[in-house]
Length: 242
Image 1: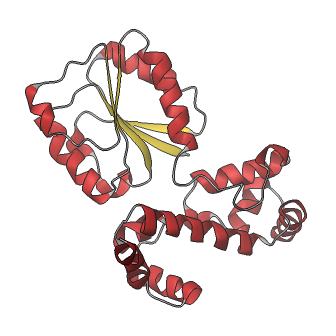
Image 2: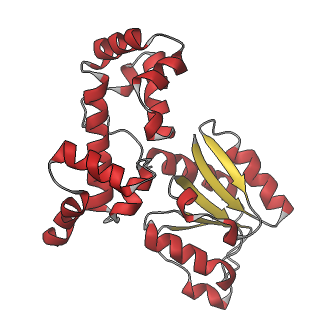
């Protein structure tokens, strides 16, 4: 499941958001009262932060998130654009203003766009996969990979999810996708790492968290085994390119 964080103190607006977000089966929502309740590590895998207030009271937390995870979307949702003078100090990157009488429809469209553009979306075209032609069961597998802890995206968890044996799952996957599950996941992880390191410029500690590692050392060992160099050396490729 994708996770969304919502901090709205207006009962009417909160009800609107709840009704809209409940339509998205792949999104679970954490309703909080204040932005200081946001845990930076939990926010890494969140799809968005939605609020009806933008002021100095929450700008510090939002700026922290922006520094650690530059592409973290912040959605301002309200009847109108009621920003205070202090709002000029708020983060500008990935700040979405959803206001006015058509705000509900605009929010639906924005959430769909965020889901489709989330960093965990598998690059089907790049991997030579036509998602629309996959069987319903294999579509469930792909959606599971996109929305669950990556450390649980292995043959055993997925076969249990489909209620079949690991051996049968491996056979089905190779027949339909044309490659082994392990080889497929290595390509997916490689895509994620290229995106997070080379395009977004995230630090190693943040990438390791996003990929489900509790210890940087464990991630570094895995990375070096796969790519023959440390993640820190790999991340410097972006600096050299610039």
